[in-house]
Image (cartoon, rainbow, N blue to C red; front, side, top):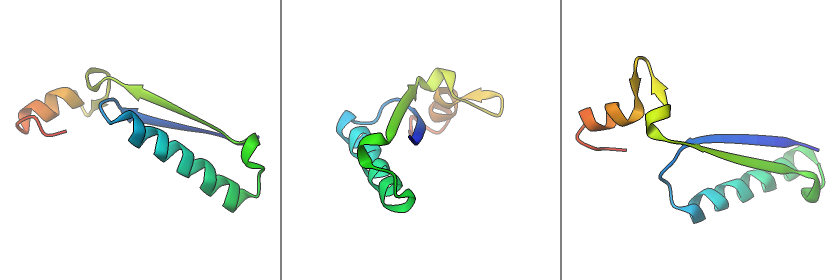
Length: 69
């Protein structure tokens, strides 16, 4: 039973996240030969204030770039 974990900074549309997880399950099924119903995909969404790049949060870096995500 493959378990695939995806960690993203929160803020994406739920449909986009769900579609991505489903697509990854399909790829794992095709490439690993595992039955689709045995594949688990878990998506963890982290607040930008908890995603640290170097010594800054992603939120701080985005703010410094003028709010770009």
